[in-house]
Length: 467
Figure 1 (cartoon, one colour):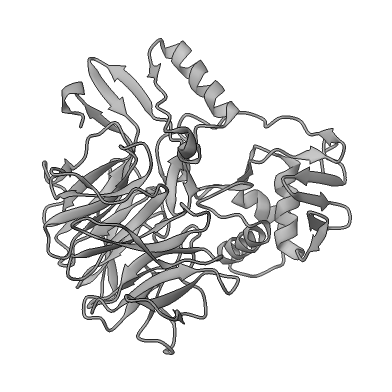
Figure 2 (cartoon, helix red, strand yellow; figure 1 turned 60 degrees about the vertical axis):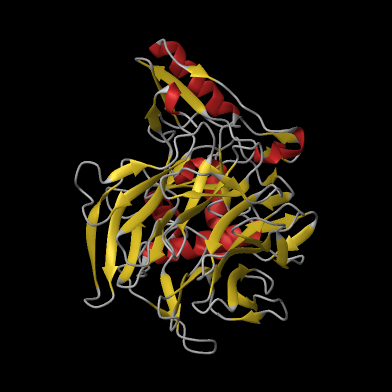
């Protein structure tokens, strides 16, 4: 333990006694010990700095312990985050640096005395757009530009290279929690925009020139694309109107229509008949599931209570809406009839972001909302919940899509954090398709597996082409 941090440390509503290994929240003692507590203590030794996975292995795991370290570390970090009500995609305290380690990002103080400031900014490589660069409001990401050290790093960078223009476009005062500040750099008359935009990839010729085309080239945030089952429309979330709402367009991005006016909307999913869209919204304070007609009309709440209810999807016959809820204390998959009624629990061993198979016989889902989730399956309510394949490990819960023949996913393993792979149900093998130009948080695909849509955090466009 460094001299700068004594026995008692406070951050947010939490207070830690590093000597007695005790953790309190608002003066209530929490149950946290063993490896999760040791990880917290190690991160608090170096607030704002990267603590590598190897450093955690050396300090927290004894040399004679023969375990699957990666699994053990992930499980311990997940338990720590649960205790802190934190998550990988919405980090308030512990930030993940993919394949490298973790960083404590909150302000920490010795009891009665502030700790030294966070040590410094991330590297330029870390600041490039990817899904770890986003903070979360509900199930929707927003750019993490509000940290002082990042502002300082960017200002210094632009002074050194002698170019760069930053323009902040803030939403209405009532939408401040959705504030998303975009970077614009002008190079040779072209404008580089780092607000997420939607791209299409032709999977029948993924490596050919012209296989990747931009669907949206807007100044605003456009994310979470989902193709309609009839192959005519896209649904997505965008803040081009000032708040984050659900929109639709033709597949080429034309004929834009705003469907909601709630704010904080995300994760749209089409009904099998392409007539309805399910989505989630935190407009009323708690994440809730809503339905809205694809041809317009008022959105109605389908699942709304004090729990978090998010990431809805549809059953193959259109009778049920699946969603993730933490009402039992941990994320599980639930379902509710489209016309309302009692909710029914589907999974018991954890689940998030469900997708029904094309034949309606199987429900696939991410095991957790955290990094590198396994993809599991259950045939029907009450059946055994099983791992689809250890070969499928998307970077995050939104990094995969089910098709008729298999599962498309963006891998976070190896040297590439944006390697597109396809797991074939028939051969039980995973084959690489190619890499995206940059990492994407979102990935969707047509049922026939011929098209994919994703978001890209940087694009170069002419001013006249912005819409």
